[in-house]
Length: 267
Image (cartoon, rainbow, N blue to C red; front, side, top):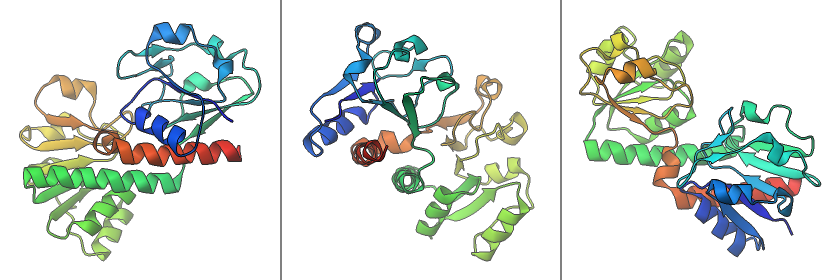
């Protein structure tokens, strides 16, 4: 029977732990969310390590709900036997990690990404409903944006992309594209801007005189806005890269628990 350790706590950790214990009959499950407990830990008591959805920084910081954990590689250097670590994405922290520690990331699992997109789309529609938004601007075009577009027939869409091929594809499926307008003007004509591009495309010029527009950034690092632009304070910016976790922790926790069990058996 495999023993599971959660290194840090997010909104889904407790749901994942309960699912693994009650449904999959894992005997030993522990959630570490303080540095004091981390220092007392014997890593060899566990077979599987699970990180919060935010993962670990290149410097070894795990952002946890109660206490950010400070991890160093020495904690993993004397692992006894084969261990598996689950994380949302890769980090330079694991470079030259012990050979008997296998890192499995969530973000390269297409089926899991579909589940995340579904829950994120639901959360976005809740925001749209609360705002009574009619004119939506999407920055980027991916599976999530396509899903929202297919669901929402009562909205006007403006999609800001630089790839002419993507623009032509969108036109073919019948969506209105403001490709003749500059990004600043596209944003100005929108009630809600949803950014999915992991680049600093929301520049000061793009946001000039648009500080009343609600901007929802669900992109990954380095995100859509630079720190310099944020410091200006002239932007109605809402950073939600893990919207699915915030709005559906129970559902996403069950999905991740199933993946952890399945992948740990296959590996």
